[in-house]
Image (cartoon, rainbow, N blue to C red; front, side, top):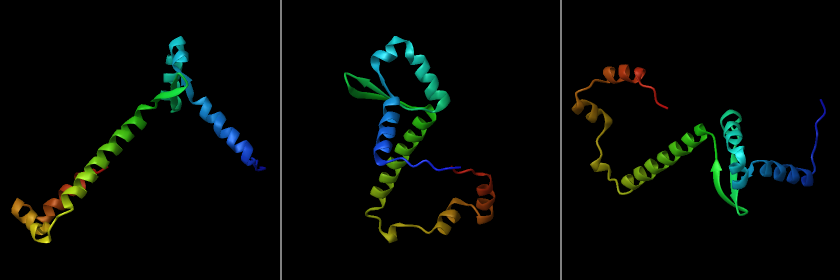
Length: 121
């Protein structure tokens, strides 16, 4: 099978062509294309950039991508909070894990058995 090599000019044109194919104007959506666009987003996992008065206004993305973005945002906020809380952390304010387990009334065998049944994403 022969490889097709594209020139830099052709690659730029191809990228521009692909970008334009993912743009849709508000007027196109209002002319009855909204249902078709939503189907493409849901079934083909395509993204669309919604344009109004020649300016980007919104993005239409598949719901699973939206969920991933929301989860990433939540994870980022939690990471920032953890970093903030540990910034001035002193070693003497910390408790060893073994002590926490003991104070909670667990054994390491119990924790290991529970760990087998827990699924972490």
